[in-house]
Length: 156
Image 1 (cartoon, rainbow, N blue to C red):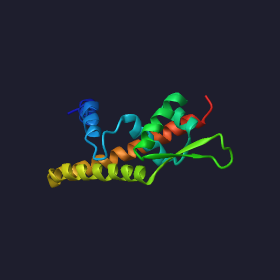
Image 2: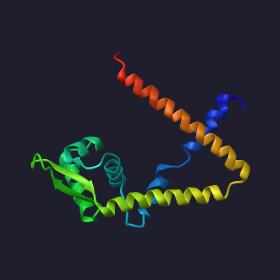
Image 3: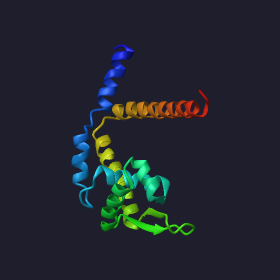
Image 4: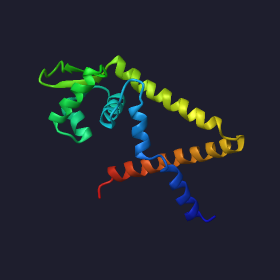
């Protein structure tokens, strides 16, 4: 098989998980139905830590009014909390609660468990090949990120 054919077949395999399948998984989440927006908020706050409502709205590309409604619903579920900024009381920061952190950790554990089940069904040969490919993908992703970062830093 030539390189172009191999590359296209790999892309087909990597893209096989449909958005519909992802949404079905979120609807069956143990803590109750989870929307993609809520998942995005959880991920951002997990990575960035507490953020001002304005910054959170910008990162999701929504209005502050929409962000307020999103945070209201997440706060009702106990996933996030609002706090006034110590230096500027007009600024409201949103942070994960213990329950929100627990949900993020639970998602990671659930994902690891499902992946483990998939790997259990592979032969030793398939596992070794997959590990080799996964490590190559990791190196390629790091090289791409380095190139993109360098391109952003250099003036055009």
